[in-house]
Length: 134
Image 1 (spheres, rainbow, N blue to C red):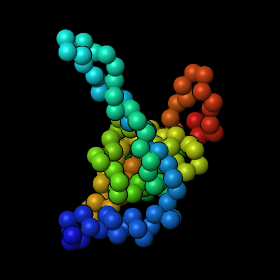
Image 2: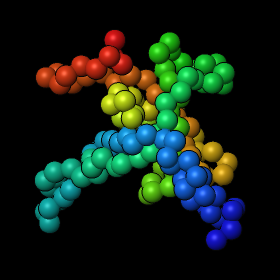
Image 3: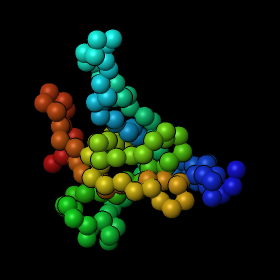
């Protein structure tokens, strides 16, 4: 496995995973499940995926991008172990337990990590609020 064929992702993961905190990638769960007659019987794809994530201040490019708001953060997610891309349909819970909506996501050139701009997720009615939403 060469560095340019994805080997660098596993090298980064092995070297840096101890510096990143455990988090969760929340999928939207909107993939319909059909019965034999074509009726929707439920939805799949909503299972959370364990990730390694680091939260940081937004970089200059993020602050200049359309849609940036005060309070947005940069979330760096190691790519090793992910089976698909991170999209704006996802949410991320960081190592401090704060939940963020993904406002943008970009895979770095070496395919080792995702760089996401996160915005504090709104709290569903009945859930406990966290400080990130205020």
